[in-house]
Image 1 (tube, helix red, strand yellow):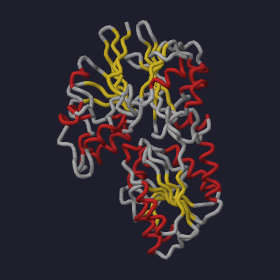
Image 2 (tube, one colour):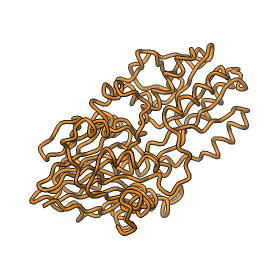
Image 3 (tube, helix red, strand yellow):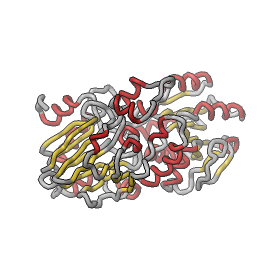
Image 4 (cartoon, helix red, strand yellow):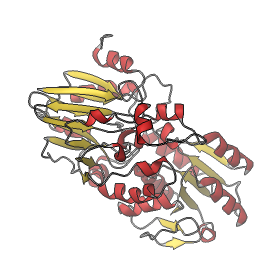
Length: 416
């Protein structure tokens, strides 16, 4: 008999830890850390003393939650879902959306002077990449989803008496068309797959609800791309920030830039490393700015001064954008005919981005900022469409501060 326990994430955005017991089998979906609690107790001045302290503060999963667990399935590599793998106290297997991206970033985390050094696994933890739309030894099937981290998956578990779908974080519309999504993601997206395979019946739907209760303006990837196009049509150059895992957004920026005859460049070492790891070069059109990318990556490199000679798109991070603008000004580049696209950080707690500070610097440079990014999470008005396709018997809300609102809209009942 399938038993589902939401040990963390039932009323918080992040920190998901869903344990499923089925006979002598016990698996976990996501292994996140609670950034809402992290920010309550830690700052730039006060840092974690170690794993034990963060367990005590309920930022990390408790040790006994792992009892009997053989496998943990991670939906994507944001820390509120990946968590700190060094917190795992015993031998088991962690299934990752991309083993290659994780291992590349693990090298950086290991040498970090901050709490990020606690992310990498201990020697006894085995990691495996997942295979889209293939049933594994635990009767778990990963299904690609669109999200602000690439790649991302939902997990379908075929249990002894119930079929469980855990969505992880996802949005309904992708920056990629259906054919591109299948090619890049390794298979059909979750909703397309379930619509095309009506014989798959979902008994229990464990669904995220990040945007419930928020007044966030619903902007879809297609809307986002149109806004980017309008911005690019009015300027000679664009500096754009993006999370290093948000490769769908990177793709949209690059495609729109090429349409406007902008030359795309990457000016962030971390982003360049991830793009290189997954072989993302948009047909060789992206080049790296050697002033900001020193790693050995598979891109042609140029100096920033060369990139400024014609219409350009500079892809960078929240942490590098001010230095890049300083460099552009030092090279005599005109700032009045440039624009900055600042992608909304997601999840905000993980990024710890001081948006107002960045904007003040851009204003000091007379550089117009545009805060643009489609949410990586579906909007409440899309819930009916989702439920019409999945048709679950039971709904369990997670990853939301308003689970009662999601549940009421999903079921018509006020009692969870």
